[in-house]
Image (cartoon, rainbow, N blue to C red; front, side, top):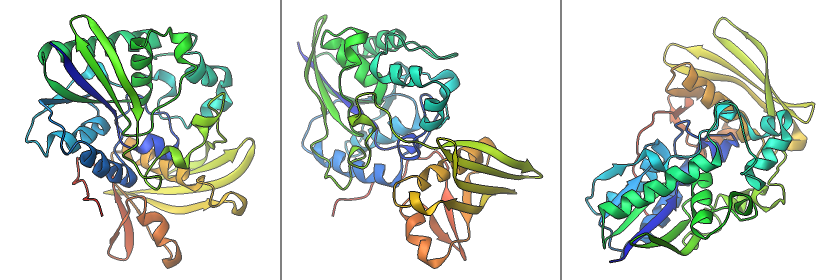
Length: 335
């Protein structure tokens, strides 16, 4: 009796967009991620599914909603499918991680067998628990066809293991784009990878990977900003963004009773249009959540409104506001 399990990487989430390390930090899906989910839903439109699982983090639960909601199924949370716990790396920008420990940064992608960070899981632990998760899903659905949403590093580790690779060998394999689909067939104790990391349902304009280069680099590195607090006090905070050791941008924020207000948001002209500015927004979002604010607001010149609207801001009175609540929103239709 064969059980089929479709494994789906979550749609684009804040960590992917802001270039921040989010392992078990509970981030949400971006506007582009929701567009990816519309294509994922279409891909599975005629596929029978008996159950839909996912890790218990918001970004995987949201991704799974593209599959379980149209079928009237219940979502089955499974913490065994969570992303790797990143310990001291959680919520640091990838640029900052490269600056602090470039060797471990490279090992994270290229030598997972050697990677170790304070407070983090090992990749061996991730391998063992995700494999246990797949076996549990198969045991609960003998002969069925199910889907399960998980995460990039967790899936890369699991799929490589099921293809007979050691952790060292897995470091030489590729990465799956957001909403990439893999298929397992489980029969008894045998688990076979039919295909992996297929994102053919995504048009180029919606793909996350088409906008990024790190996954193409041999060491999986990318130029990235790191941040330092330059002023803080009385509910205000300013962070400088640095590329290497040069100040390349600044973001200033002020706490209000029900929101975090961005009062200054600048990137040097030479870096504009290269997707560095969005990393400033990532700092504001994380700081707002740390201060228990569910909204980020700003007064925005008319010529910049389009920039912020594409990242989820919406008009509110005479300003723009970004809703940070961890809720599952309606997936758009195609077209």
